[in-house]
Image (cartoon, rainbow, N blue to C red; front, side):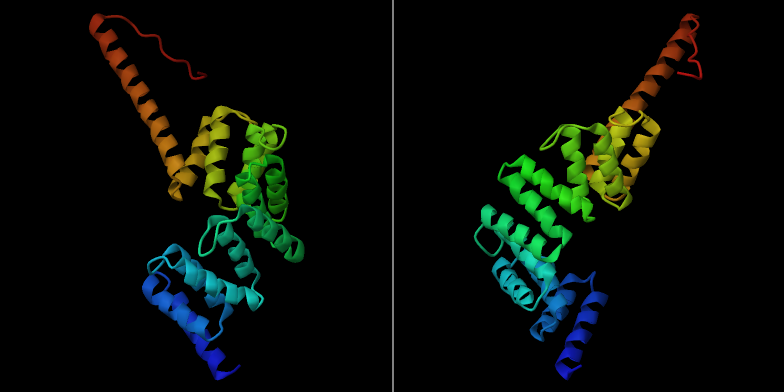
Amino acid sequence: MTKRAEDADVLFRRGLAAWDDAPRALRCFLGAAERGHVESMCIAGKWLAFGFGTKPKPKVAYELTTAAAALGSVEARWRLARFGLMGLGTRKNLTKAAADAVRGWRETGYARFANLAGEAFDLKRDPRRSFRWHLRGALAGNVDSMTTVGVGYRYGTGVRQDLREAVRWYRKAARRGCLHAMSNLGICHKNGEGVAKSKQRGLWWLRRAAAGGHEGARSILASIEGGDARTSRGRRKSRVSAAASGTKQPRRSRGT
């Protein structure tokens, strides 16, 4: 390893160690990127695009990511296609982004390309092609595509509705840590969509999603638990009123 490469690797490791101090970490990654460290180029490109540790600098991010892609980084090549989809550092072009994603998938088999193609065709309002690409991504292990496939089956978007298949894909993604899938799976269990109805199981998944920071799950839990609290207060009030009037209230059986 050359002295330049050694210096780049040292800076990269310093950046990882300072990860929670974004400005400091970014300076390290940029220093390593200047010395040709490809992984640092990818990280710095992402951070510059979205403003981690600095103000957003999408054009610089695009140039840095282009350099990493030219050095053979598949992730950088994928990110360039995503930048094109979002219009970050380059002109937004859904058709080109879709074509780049499809080509990237065929040439590398990288699952995130299939997911990106699915997103691009969704934005182009082609739900069938979007679903097919997300299914490719899901089968290749991409958790975002797994969740999207679940959504497709649940609502019949781009494919025939199949609630059991929706639950199956939600479960696959949830077990791999996808918060959105956990939330959706919790709702399916709570409502009995494609699976036996179980409020307890539904709440278990919703709480896992909420604990991970999923705002939708937190909102649903607040609504459910607030409703339960109101129901409980109503029952207590009813019993107190009945006791005051001397009327016996029927007890709920254990099986209800």
